[in-house]
Length: 180
Image 1: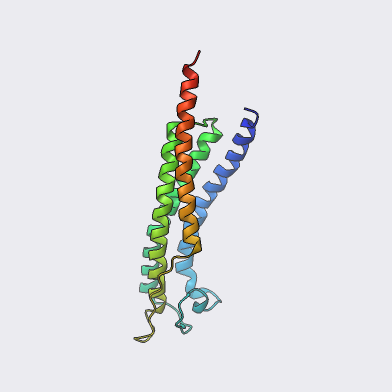
Image 2: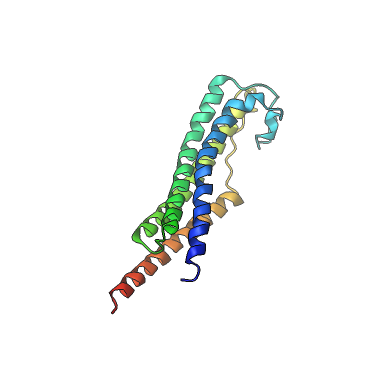
């Protein structure tokens, strides 16, 4: 393979980038909920609902509920990143077609779809939390499924197809090893 050294080098870079993301993304989620009252931008900039939200600080209970609700999509996202990191660790180690690749690709595809579903639910919960202190009749429940979510689901479908291709490649590689 002519590009094997390039694959190993790029896989090493991607492995470390994913490792950094695994640390930074949870810190971002945590800091979002615990620093939101100390930001300069108004609460309206964060929400997407049509009902405006008066500028105010959110109570600790709402911040805690917001952080708790973010844990579910965050956990799935970190699992996606860990799965991808394992894939690139295999590439970095020089393992290209293996059964473990197939399992990791399928797992990643399923986790991506699950992440989209949890993200939609999380954004809905977030819209309720941000408008919870509005007067009755002005509270917001916003459920959105847009092009970003559709894009991730399409990527998940592509990753699942790649898993099938990897499985066929693995079978061919095993058959080639048996050929004299």
